[in-house]
Each structure stands twice: as structure tokens, then as C-alpha cells.
Image (cartoon, rainbow, N blue to C red; front, side, top):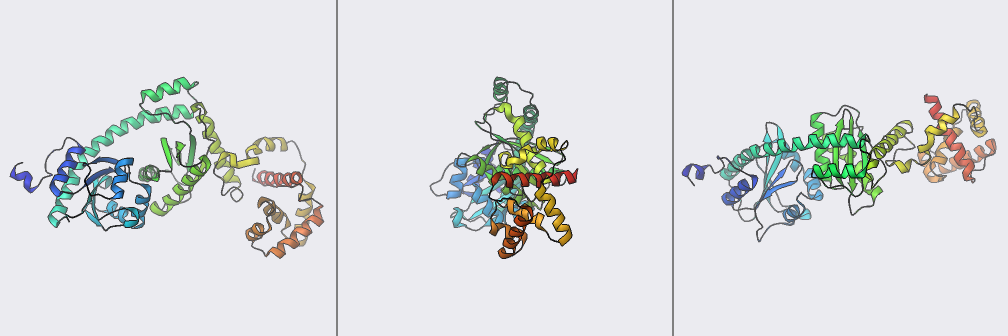
Length: 414
């Protein structure tokens, strides 16, 4: 090595990230990993006798463990890395198996492309070495830009295929299998279409945040992702360690919460279609997810905690029932009686009945929802039965009233 490179070892051209990692390791004599912006492992030097559990797990899984990422966010470390191009020191965090580290972001202008992580172990980096590490990050920028361009071309091919799947273009599983093979991607054994609707159009910066959360959550396996104005659509598989419904529900609630907590994006609604094995059903799963969002918009209180198509229950059939109702002027007599009673006596018995049925006739839950004492609710329910002469122990009668109450609300909105 020439004297020029001894003084500034990273002021040369590297042919690969592996070449750069070896150079960083030779210079600092410390374990090194390079990740992309979504914490997927890109390169690392060979194993040492001494390293920490977080690094071992990252190398085995080819990505940083979710618990490590979440802890680094909570400690403010990742936001700090995203805000500066200077190396920062991260003290040991035993609960996630992380020893003392130095990290630096790899960036092009203000966009973070990835990170270099160094486990300091016995060798603490000097101020001069920290400056050299910053130069190593600059050397990594060119290599990551090349990777990014290659990835972008692949994504364009994937998106064309995505739209063909979601619009029902393919008529046989054989055609779909052939396309997966051509794109060199593995077919999911089971999948669901997830849809997220934002209050505003999704910006380029928001797309980066979205990709980051999906890549790092490790709650689902994402196969395709596309953004259309204010809508994010995914074709994803459940994680092997979770049942289907729990897995997707946890991811939807996680995604909505973390977009708000980490990136201050609020008002997102999410849903999931049915989990299918046949990829010819992608369009069906997508339409089911859209139906969930549509019904959540119409009945926000009732369907607040509903995310899956099958959870809609009777709401799945409301369009057909509503069509029938348009030619039928029938209204349940109990509803008519309570509405008249409320007008004359300035009471709220009709709303009370709706909440009571919606809470599955649970007095405690209904009283909390109505913000009244349980004794008050008991009195109201006795009066409601007296006024209407309905039998609330009869499931058919109770559900008939409830369906009419929901349809009545929808008719008022039309």
C-alpha cells in the first residue's frame, strides 16, 4: 500500500462492498457490518472469536432483528444517525445483546442509503479513526447507488406483474408460476392483500418511511408493494410463527402506530382480504380488503377494531340487503316506537339499544361505552323492553333489530 493510502485508506475506488468491509476491518481491527437503509445486511467481515449476539443474529438472518431496531429507535439512536453524517457512539445495551458500537450513515446528499456498524470491543476508535470511518461511508456511497439502480429496474418489472395479478390478468396458475420463475422470485404458499389508505397523497419521503417499516417489522413477508396516490397495497404472507389472522392484525396495528410515532403520519386506515393459496385469487383478496375499508368508513364505531374481511360478519351482505330494502318500506316496529318515545321524552333509548346489542348484550361493556352507571343502563333496558315488547334473549329478533338499525343509518347517509 502506498504512503498516500496509509494516511487516508479509504480514498480509493472499491470494486465491491466486501472489498470495502475488508479494508475497514484491516484498518480498525474491529468487526464490521454494512446494512442498507432498511437494515438488511449487505456485507460483513468474517466471524471473530468475540462478537455480540446482535451481530450474530444479523448475519444469520441477513437483517437486523426487529427487537434491536425497535430499541435503537426508542433510544433515539437511529433518528440521530439519520440526522447526521458524523459517526456516533452507541453504548452497550445488554437487553438486546448489543456491545459498544460506532455507527455512521451512508448517504447521498440528505438521503440515507445505509449504515456502517463497527463493534469496538477492545479497540476504541480514536478521533482520527472516526474521521476515517466517515471517509469509508463516502466510499460506500458509490457502491450503494449502483445497487439502488439495479434494484429500481427490478422493482419496475415487479410492479407490472403486481398490477397484472391484482386486476385478474392471469387466468391460470401455470401462467402465474411461469412469471414468478422469469422474475426469479419465489411463490408464496399463502398470501393476503393488505390495503392502507392515507389521508393525504403519499409523498416520496413517506414511501421511504413505508418501505423502512415493512422491511424492518419482520411480522410478515412482503412479496409486492405498490403506492397509488393515497393508497398502499401489499401482497404478503403470514409469518410462520403466527396464525394468519393474528399475524396480519398485529402488522396492521403496528404499521399504523409506528407511522404515527416515528414519522408523525396520522389518520391511516388498514385492512386485509382473505388468506388464499391460489394466486388467481389476488384480485378477490384485494376487493375484500377494499370492502373492509368501505364498511369501516360507514360504520367507524362499530367496526373500529375490524381489519379482516371475515370479521365483517353480516356487514359483508349489506349491499345485497340494502338493494332489497330500497323496494321495501318496512321498518321494525321496535325502532319506530323507541324513536317516537325519544322525541316525546327527550331520552336516548334507541342509541342505548344499538350499543347494547353491539356490545353483545354485555351490560358492563355497554355501560362504559355509553358513559352511564350500570344501574342506569339496567333501568333503561327494562324500559326499552316495556316500550317495544321485544325479547332480547331471542337471537334472531335481536339481530333483526340490529341489522335494521345499521341499514337505517346507511339510508340516512344516502
